[in-house]
Each structure stands twice: as structure tokens, then as C-alpha cells.
Image (cartoon, rainbow, N blue to C red; front, side, top):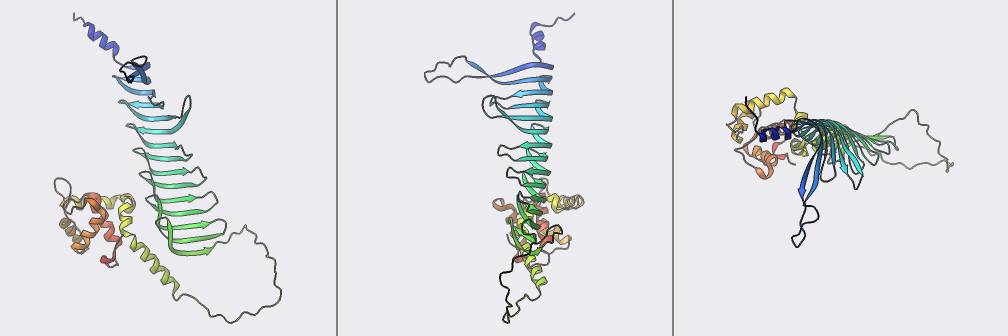
Length: 354
């Protein structure tokens, strides 16, 4: 009969499995200037109360952090996983709930609600600690945005309703209104429909919006005598529809590269299109999964696009910026090159700029 040694018995007792009331972590106290110790040598730093599995936090548990913060919720493999709530310390005996929702490997991922210190609140999808996907932000000033997010920024189609009743529907890039959009002015009953650039209306049409529920008040007439206007020459645009069309095309042309750099790939392409482009890319890539500018030119020619090499170099410099290297083009850069070429069809390639 094999008898367990004392250290094995002690080790088995020390192994954390199942529910434990509390496990403490301690840290060393800082010393005084003369080298003496301040009171006790060790001080409690963190505490965990909850389930364990093979010496790792697993199941439901509450973690008290050294800075006063607290997390209560699911754990797996020593990391926050599943549903959980994170509380932030705001002084002695005062805590503020910061986030409630899904966690994956210590990061906010899935659906959750974030309560910001400035009073903003976000409800929606998260990925790697950032709002990413569909979500709604309720701002402290009363404005509400509901729509797409990308790595913490408003990106894609979204609707912004301002506290005063104004209303914007359209596209966003890099947290700013960019592309087609409509803005309704609540107090004026007017709407602007057109192209937006860098969060500002660039070109479009203003028009009146009739509200059937609004009763127009009769204005008091101050001048009752008949008044004959002198002959005034009629001023109007020649072919206003074409003028507007050209103006909008010019605005889009000037933003082709900017939008190709910042718009998420899954907004520019369908899933099938991305798979097809990936196959084209892999057919010419090296062992490091990269291609050269010459490779990309050959691929574009096979797709029916004959682009001058110096034009491609110019596009690539904008995309890679300070990391320009025409011998190491990655898949994402290649896809953004394709986006620029597709959007610039019909324009003089040499005129495309940021």
C-alpha cells in the first residue's frame, strides 16, 4: 500500500477546487525613507470569492481589485468569461457600475451596456473592449445615435436624433457623417438631402417639408396699400439637375481614397466578393501571404482594369502611408486598392486624390 507523503497531502489541501469563501492576494508595503517598515510588512491587495477549477477561477465569482474596482460574474481559465458586471471605485464606500454584459477572455465581447463617467450610455454589440456592430448611444446631452459601429467609432449607416428634434439619417465614416445623408430641421420643417464630407454638408438640396398637423398662423398685414414691383430679371440656374449631379460626383471623387482607407471592408464588399478577392490574392501571394505591386497589376488586368503602375504606386502610398513597400502588400491593402479602382472608374485616374 502506497502512503502519500506529507507534502502531497498539504499540496492537495492547498489546491483550489469548487467554492472558496475568499482567497487574498497581498503586496509588500513601501518602506520609509530611513529604511524602516511602515506598520505591517504586507497589506491585502486583491480578493476573490467564488468557484475554482484546478487552481483557476472558473464559474461564478467576485473579484475585488487593489484599486477598489470590483467584478462579479462568470469566469473561465482565470479570465472573465460569460455574463458579468464591472464596478468602478469612486472613493470610499462609493462604486459606479461601468459595464454589464458579455465577456470573452477578459474583454467586453458580445452584447452589453456601458455606463460612461460623463453620463453617456451605450447599449449594443462589443468586440475586444470596443463598441463594434449594431448599437445605440444615449448621450448625456439628450442626443441619441442608433446604428453601426466599428472599433469604437460610428461607422456605416446610422441615425442621429438630437435633443432639439433635428434628425440625421445616413452614412458615417471615422465617427463623422460622410457620404449620402439627410438632415431634417425640426423647427424649420426643412430637409437637406445630399453628400456629406468630414461631418459637414457638401452639396445637395434643401426643401420644405409639409406637416399636415401644423397650422400656419396668419401674419398681420402692416402694409395694406397696393404696391407695384418694378420689373426684375428672372435669375435661375441653367440645367440645375445636371449642376447638382456634377457637384455630387466631384465631392465623391475627392473623397474616394479617404473612404477606401477608413470604411470597413465588410461594408464595401459582400461576403462572397471578399472570398473571391481573397482567392485572387492567394493565387499570387508568397509564403508570407503577401504580393508585390507587379502581382497586383497583373491581377487587375485579369479583372479587366488596365491601371498605370505610377497610379497604383500613388494609391499604395496613400494606403500604406509611412510604411510604403510595394513588395509587401497584404490582403486588406489589396482589397482597399480594388475599392479605389472600382470607385474611380469613369474618372481621370490621375485626378484622384485625398
